[in-house]
Each structure stands twice: as structure tokens, then as C-alpha cells.
Image 1 (cartoon, one colour):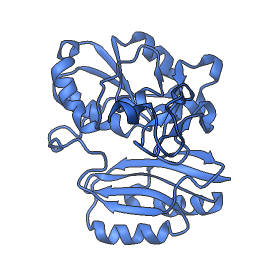
Image 2 (cartoon, rainbow, N blue to C red):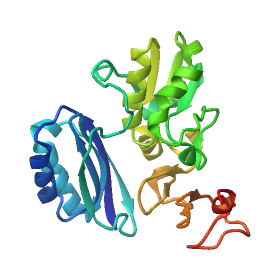
Image 3 (cartoon, rainbow, N blue to C red):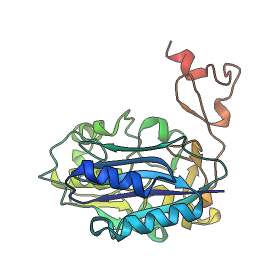
Length: 268
């Protein structure tokens, strides 16, 4: 059994090349991807339980990462093929000037309080991309139909300005996209923005099925493809022709494993 940690933190970082080398050493027994940028760290890493725990202990002992957010899950097979530590301009790409809005944050809502927030919000937004939303979401959540997160600000500008004075709730996989999305909205005049702390992963980890408002499965960026309640591996597959995640309902007559799916044919 492999242990998986999804993690992030917004924190000013410098000398990224030296940090990259240090992370390579700390995580040498692991696989996965870590992104580092002047604004922080983001990624998912995996390995044998002892190796992962040791790496996270080293990471959180570093002053910059002493309150690093991370969420554990498990995988029966190795979820990544190798370790990649990359230097980027942003740890989650928005292509907007960060100086004016990144100090802002939406109000974090714990998983245990999220159901109540869903009922009270005037609008609930799924901040993820369209291919993720189609695998599962919270009932009634608005899908922005984005292909990339960098399109989210345009979606807000064109569709949500009428909601500036109303309570808005948002969620994403692990929370990092909501950090930037909520900050952008607050900087542009939205007054009351709430975000699911720790994202869908935290909710699925701590919410019983009979009390859950989640429907479907949660897409993850590794070989598991999707997770269900309790962060157990889901039933979704990946088409290796077009890289689209597929639900069991998508495995129709057009599906040929490793060759094509209905989305491949649609886009030809």
C-alpha cells in the first residue's frame, strides 16, 4: 500500500534552484510532482508510508513550510511513475497580477460545516475545470465550463457581477484553486466569499456517505484517476487516446481501451 499526500502553501520563496535541489534530496524515495514558485509550493507526492512521513517531517521542519497544508490518502499501486520538482512562475496558474489581491482570502469553512454553507449560499461554484466537474460535484453547484483555471477570472467578470453583495460558496479538489479564486473575487468587490477548507478531498475524508451532499467521484491528477468517499479509489478510467477521464457510463460501444473513446470521436 502506498501513502499519498496532497499539499500546498502560499508563502514567499526565493532561491528556487537551491530549494529544488533540497526537495529532490528530501523526496528521493518518493514519486509525484511538486511545483515551486515565488508564491509558494503545490503538489502531490507518494511513497511507502515511512518514506512519505519522513519527507513531510523534513518539509514541515523548514521555516517556510512549518504550517504546510496536506491531506493523506492511499493507493494500492504506485500512483506516479517518477518524481518531478519543477520551478514555475505560479503554483496554480491564473495569469493575473498577484500583488493586488493575493493577501485576500475567502472565509474557510470546515468539512463538518459545509452542508450548512451549501444551504445558505446564494450561489455555489465548482472552481475546477469542466472535465473534472463531469465526474462529480455538489448538487446544484455551478460549473463554469472552463478548460483551464486561468479562464476563471473571465468567467467571473462576465457572469457573476450581479452576485457581488450575496454569499457565495466555492470548492475545488484540495483548496488551492479556491485560494486564488476567492482572492480575485474579493479584490473585485465581492463581499461574502466562502471556500471549502481542504477542498473536496477533506470533505470526502471526513463526511459519512449518508450525510454527504457530494454526488459522483472526485478527479485526481494521478494514476488513480478518481476518488470516492473515504478517499477510496473510484471507478473512473482515463482514455489514453484523448486523456479524458471516463465514468462507467462512458464505456459504450465506441470505447476501445488504449485506443479511443466517444470523446475522441467527437473531437475528430
